[in-house]
Length: 253
Image (cartoon, rainbow, N blue to C red; front, top):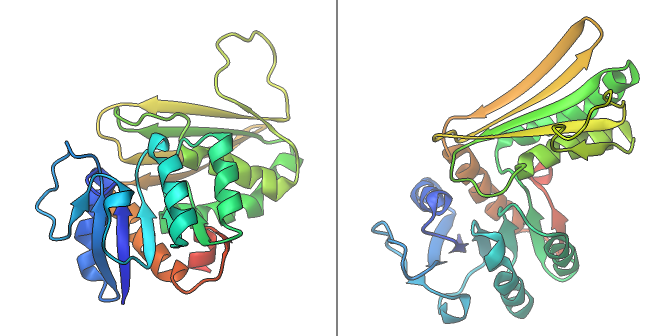
């Protein structure tokens, strides 16, 4: 059995991870960290305001917090050498670089989306992108999320665009809006559009638009459970790994 510390335990995703962990005999939630002014939702484990306050032993950290909380987490990981599954999106280039540096000392799993379905889709996108873009297909990505999501575009949208780049080994420009442009669409760009509204959990669509034909590949998450289960499976996987930087593609094989 592994002991898990949830960083950001009282948010929507933290609550879901806490609830679904009961389905995993190999996982015990040892403690959580969140702001003092957030309700604990009747959780059975202790919750602390800061990482420095945590007394329980943890084998893996599941981070589902915010970009502003990451620098403190990085310092804690460096000090304790506890492996971490990092699910938080909207990180700066400096924070991404810090994750890469930490992974040389500690096992780190980083993913902008913990869904098994999305990570399978990434493999598909890599496989078909070279053939389609080579035949002149343009690539557009549309992502939709709930009205309270702060970052845009989503980390998953960037992952999908990166999968096109990796599959084609071409250098595409990412374009997040064309309202100030009055020009023909160039071939070497990927348009990424963000929609925010209501309680949409997450929807991502990759559009390959060619001459007289369009291929659309879509993934829809109807519940945060798909992300929470992915995070829990990632924690089990990471507990057995050596120092290095891992992704969900390593988990699903």
